[in-house]
Amino acid sequence: MAATLFRIATNSVMILLLLPYAMRFDLTLLGRLSLRGPQRRRYLWPLTSWLRALAKPSVCPVGGSRALALVGGIALVVAGGLALGVPAIEPVWPLALLVGARLVLAGAAPERLPGGPSRNRLWLDGLGAGVALALALTGPAVLSRQNPAPIAGWLVLYQPLALVVGSLAVSVDPLAAGESNRQAGWHFQLLHAGGSLALLETARYAWWIAASALVVTQFASTASWPRQLMLVVVGTAAVLWLRRAYTEGLRQRLDWRFWPVLTILAAVSLAITLVIWLS
Image (cartoon, rainbow, N blue to C red; front, top):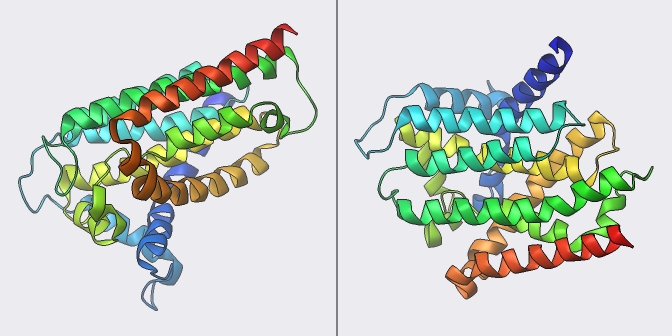
């Protein structure tokens, strides 16, 4: 038990340290900014800038709950640590933490974020992501326990549709800002506003990292821990890029139809899994 808790804590701390660099990488994608900061801090600048933003009091009363935002962010980090730290765990537990934390974040957000959607839209997006991700990961979870194979990435060959659906469900921005999300300025507006907005912005990236960790551990369940961690970093970068494609393309074209379409694709993937399993 002690060793398991230590692994979960270690992975959670690593995810926590990865957060500011994922934010800065996203700014590089959105605004073509360098990962390096001022000469004195250089590569530590994303970390120190993030810590200052979290410690900063709220500059304007925008509403929302700082306590709920903190709880949601911690739950996301622990969910990622749980997925990476306990390979044999049933995926339902980290998935339940992820979905629950995302719904908590919707409750923690103000009635309408600056430049963002209403709270009702955040609730619907959270439920849609949970259903689609659960259906997408059920197939790999069943196959990995019934027919294990020595090749780490074998489930990608068996379940390409599930991987696509799961990646799309993860890539959806928990606090989508529409058109303004294309610009790096919205990130600064949230993070450096302090208070609950800074915690919400942190939790936004915690969702992408932790959910990527869950997808990686399900599709590369036999890979070693260092390889899984590398895949999480690569997967997070891919998800951030995919998030741009989603906000600029699929979201505008499908709008409210996105989640029903994704759920149908996830159900088709699960049906294929059952056919493979029963045969």
